Length: 543
Image (tube, rainbow, N blue to C red; front, top):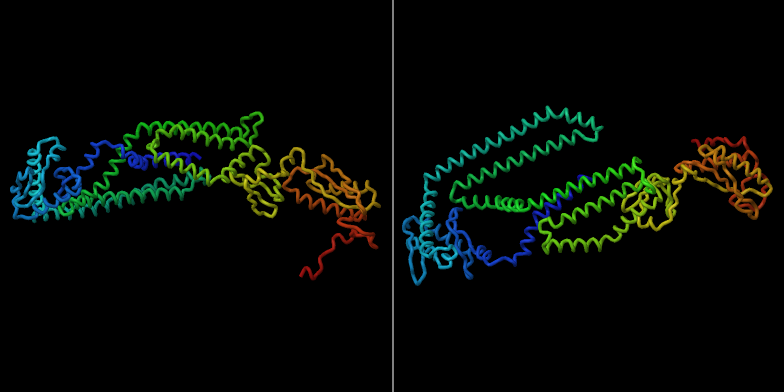
């Protein structure tokens, strides 16, 4: 129970923290201010993965598209070695401040660009020109033969170091696993013996093996990612790929870190709610477990009610804790979160009417006290021993060892005969009827039936058996022998023994049983002589 509760609580929090902020942002995007819109319309101009400066977009020329065009122009000018690096200049033409590299047009510095930076147009243009000149010099230096050769040696050295580190990591993992196996394996086996094999050493060791494999795979992935990041960052042709790959990895981590820091106060409150709920549930379980075991007695409260009542209170406490924690779950106030809640509520109400009715019926049956596990009951001509009483169904085991599943809602509306409930205290009355002719004295019949009951092993001597004359029929009197037993589970075996003894006693006294029908006296009485009671099987039947 504790593990399920912990996993459910943590999963709700994690799902809310990871997914709902994004949904919330999508729901509330329309409330952003104009300054945020301006920031979104700014894009970086970069060469070889290095950002030079940021430029502003226009209505007909979005920032990202403009930045991409300028980046390609700078790279094209840098790759043309006929254009000197110091040939980058400013040109004022038609009230526009242009930046050229030799004769190659690079970009226009507008008043909007300068206004966005908070400086003058000329100052911004000179600063951008300097950045472009430096990037052209760096672009050509990074692609020079000596530099590429030097970085190739660095990449080769990194590859050798990468292989060595991988070999060392794999060796260390194997060594640690061997040391752990030598020192801990015996303790794990001892733990299995002390726990009476509830804790399996093979399962624990398998879990340890999975942990080592996970650590090994994580270490290999981390080292491999660092290696490729370093090698790709060495060469100008792949530096942009390295920067993009790094941003893919780091940006989600940074977003999660920022979200986690903002979530910490609410997280502390949720942890406190979780701890209080957990220990409150422990106290409630301890109380009702004591009632169930008989340590605590409550007036007019059956011990069988203890655990079902605990389960109901557990649901109430958990729901109350979730209601208190609800405002502190990220995104709980957004329309998306509320919409999901309403949607789930509608699905639950439409698709679970029979499900809920069976659960309610299951608890109702518990508090009715109609039966308990192990009782022999009969429901609508279905007889069996109660094997399991669940929230949705009750399972019976028939006398033929068949499983009978009865929905609790159907059980609630049926008449239930419980053969076991009063057998221990008052005794269960077993009864069977015989038809005897009027020529036989009723006192003799009474004595014979009581004698048969007395010979039946398992039937109680006290209270004494008694005989009822149920009816005076046309040709016979119907007598009913009633005897007590205290074990309802053996009632069918007792019936067999009782019927055998009735046959024996009536044969001994030469009294004919006239059931099921009688039309006249036969020439030979319908009784079995005593010398034929143990007649053996014929040889043909034996073969």
